[in-house]
Image (tube, rainbow, N blue to C red):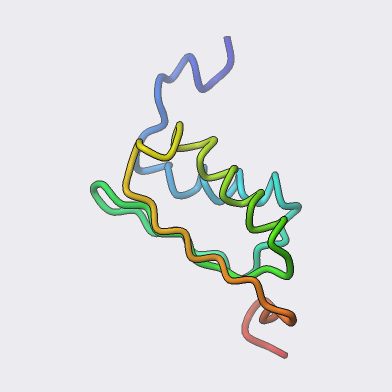
Length: 91
């Protein structure tokens, strides 16, 4: 039995951190300016990346944590841009 099974389902207070960690894991940290906002029944993801493949991986990471697309209202706004902004807003 792993730690998640012992503690039961993910608590909402840790959900944003779980999503951030999973996105970083599946994309190798290549989603820049990543923001995760959680409200009562809504999850909002924002960020930038250089490829549609990484965007797709990030979405799958979110769905891995949420348990599927119907679990919550999901707004997934990861933009694919040629030159994503550098961390900290420095170009």
